[in-house]
Length: 274
Image 1: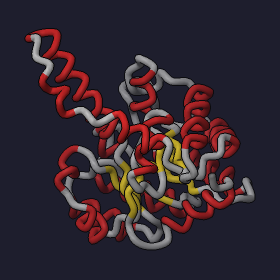
Image 2: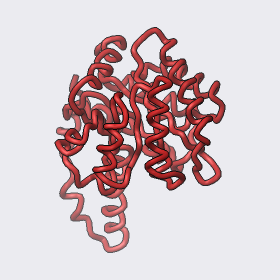
Image 3: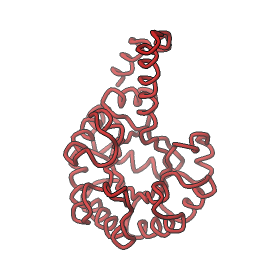
Image 4: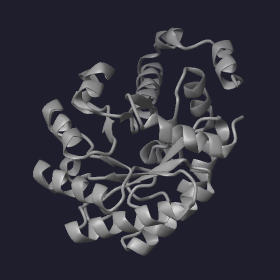
């Protein structure tokens, strides 16, 4: 297994050119399978993790639980891991900065912080506070004295609290105060995604979800995207299998869908792949 310094450095280099896919495991087993299939980096998924605890998405998982989970994903493979740390688990910039330092202690090679709250209908922070929070996080990341890729998320377009103009204003400001990567989940179109990429000089993360699942890797790269993440999409695809197969078995006695299951030996090979 690679040492942490090597994987942190590798994560920085992945952002320097090209466009890579960063899948999101929800436990050690799924992390190892994704690594065996050729992933170059992984990211936690806050909702995927919440589902494993029998919780819904959106602030029910504590910071301590999220960081322990991140540490388990880091330990599962030699790959760099980015942490989905929601809003940093607090409104105040000082809390966000503390979350960055704690994230680094888990072995994460980077993390993302959202500009929206985890309560009151998931509202975005006012512009000035959002920028102040990113500045505090970026300062904390720089104070680590080791590579750490900090991603600032502008979630307002996705949750409907502001428009693309405001998203652009925010990511430009986020870059100005030190964000290494910016991220506007689910903009209205590929043209808007390209506009996001041309508005900043730092790398841009894009989410492959919703209508964007119809886009190819090449299309994301052509738009200027440097990193593609999947969020909870893979976890929810797995849950679709549970929903459909178990529902079919219990409601109509049909077990045939299980004929498509993967061989246990194939899974074993991926779990033991080094």
